[in-house]
Picture 1 (spheres, rainbow, N blue to C red):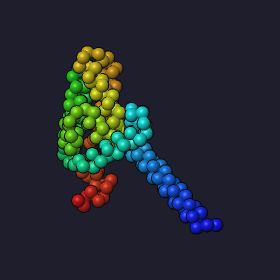
Picture 2: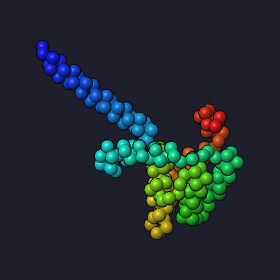
Picture 3: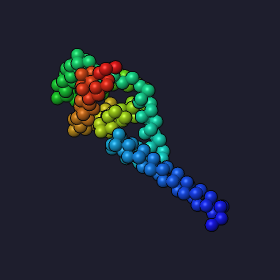
Picture 4: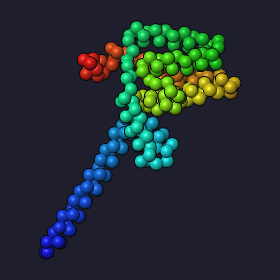
Length: 190
């Protein structure tokens, strides 16, 4: 076989290896994003109508989140927030709309203390989706119910469901510095 034939075969093999490596890296990226974002992965892809754009959006969320200084609560702060939450829940029977509004404000204060930026709701939920992908949808649902309540368009059952959603997020956000150091021993050394 002439030399140019061997060169052509070598180039074809190199191209095939490059394509295989590229496909493998894309598959690995998809698996990592699916694993990290859970249900938020599918939601984002459906929202963007493109796997490439959806995955890019999730990657940019991850990069933004890594630049943030998200902190665990001190045990004392967690106790303070727990007491506040119990008070809000206690008011729900007598004043459901006010209790839901208060729950919204309490969650926002908690997020702020943890270090999440409070730019706007969409940015807050995107930032939350990186660390709490399994409850961020609860936050969206609770916020929507809270907005409906402000306009008098939420039933008592809607309000109850909103409180359930806020509680799920609240409990996830209550992570204390003690829990964080148990989950990540390197963070305890920092």
